[in-house]
Length: 287
Image (cartoon, rainbow, N blue to C red; front, side, top):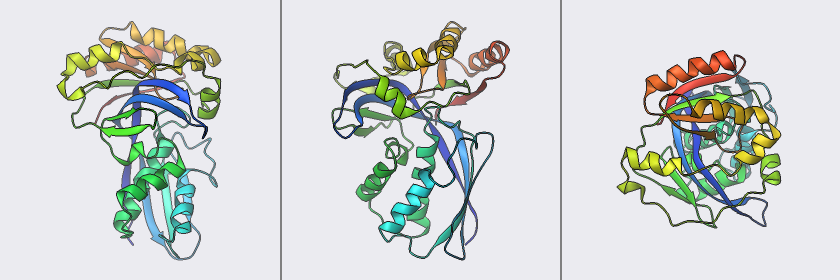
């Protein structure tokens, strides 16, 4: 089998509201999610033998458990369900998405490989079953199965895919803090009421931005209390020229700024590098 190269894209929570805690330990939430052109690069090849060779490389390889991660979990589930009998793989994941940042890198890796195996290995897994497998890996993994703007809504965390593209200019800042999703959700005390679902198909760019300006991330208060540097970043970014708003994505620690133009985002990136020289940041666009 030849070596395949796959792009595993980063997700961004443009807004996130926690509705309540569920009995299964997860939370009911409302979130508008998009994807941007920052991605991990995965190379995968079928090899002889019975033992997988999984390697993490790249800038953000550290902090990942090589024996227990989303990729090993996916392979375990596919073998348990007899989809990948007697097949081993050489998988190298170049980590360009920071680990523990709220950008969904691990979930994206598993979702992208699940699609790959289903297609190239001719597993014939139906969409409903793929969603079920993805859900066993992590909360965000089913969301990553499609790279479309997505609304996570309602008490059952229903996934609604949106047809329109947002075309947003995004600055992402990672302050070298690995946030524990479990820890952040456990400490969160802020809950919101479920509002009527917005009709995004009727929104032009201006209306979308006006809507998002009024939104927030309910986890930001908890994250900022634990890591005060994060609110310092957000406050610095949001007052820069061309910035519509700034907040954390997911459960942090990455902060985002949404800008009117790509040049405005680039200019702010330069200012961020001057004020926070040790922090990683990148300018990206939604896909």
